[in-house]
Image (cartoon, rainbow, N blue to C red; front, side):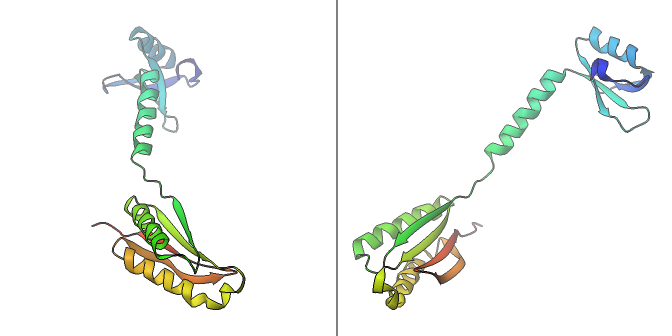
Length: 165
């Protein structure tokens, strides 16, 4: 922009978008300064390079503002984890199921984990029943990303929010 433009001639575009034609770079800079603006190179690969007369500070501010609004409307999906045990009581199970429903309604993915300790690992079907029951209770809100599977001493499945039409 301005004095950093090193080519001898440029195709100038005015601040309202009108063509000023091919002019010497020095003259284009002078025209921009008289208008209280900057000469900014917008197409350096063209012959001659295309430069526009604009308020560069305002242009940068508007670009940053546009990027900020783009980020504001971006949805971030987080992974929440709920841990259960095979001997989790009925009331505690219902509380955790309600938490899963809330997470799914807010658009979060949920990893449901059943942890086994000691000899509980022999009764992995209890963990399987817990996960099936959770799927029954939250089935209307979610889709299963990963089916229940054992990894070491824990069994887990991954639920994601159902697509809204």
